[in-house]
Length: 320
Image 1 (spheres, rainbow, N blue to C red):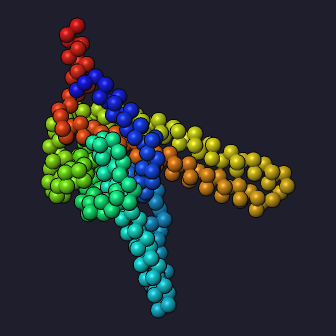
Image 2: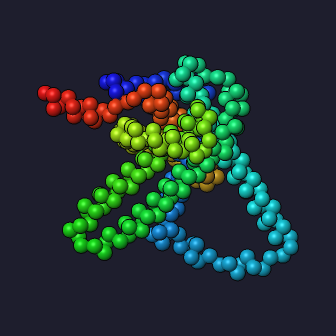
Image 3: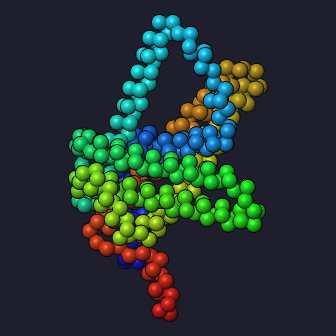
């Protein structure tokens, strides 16, 4: 691989994201289910809470309160369940189509240096809904399975000899991270084959796996680079959290001075609103950026061989 390829991937992706802000809409909507800020984090926290026994409200749940249904309550519950399911399906549809739209737009930019019209991208994305949804579901199921196994093993570490606890903890954590990066890499490659080459679901997944095997180190290296950027974004979000409640703090000071509880509540709601807006803003840009980086690397791998930077630098070291 030529010397600046990773740098080019990050630079090209950022240029694409910054000069085509319409893509932020796709990045924002795809976060709802299929993005870097999607439901994966929520599911992971939920499973961790369940495994640690923190979700005691489930254990204390009283089913008998639901056994005394009246016909009106039952009909109301069915209507509520139907509405919630409909909203959930709509969110999934919009998120998956936005994910496909983002893949189409970035691929077109890297191939032709133009972004098609918003309506054309969205219309094209609908054709790939089931393939992208299937790939995302497979990815989520595999990641959740790994998380469950990791949690079960992690809970057994205190029972081992203290001499082996720390090395095994690092080993297990490393294996889990590697497996997760592999799943994410293969999933994005499979999505690329489905959208760009218009391959079937099974063919896309097998092609994605073959592409990953041909570029194992490159895939893991770009994954680690994005993982470091993840940490930077996390620190940015911590700063965003502090900034979001600055107006609220001023309102709380005034509310405390005049003893107005309504004003204090308004200040809290204002801070919460600003926080959600800022997180959505950062998440939309970041989700669009990471997808653009992956698609840049996919397009490069798809058409030419890319060699690992690790082997490149190791080779130069031994030549000295």
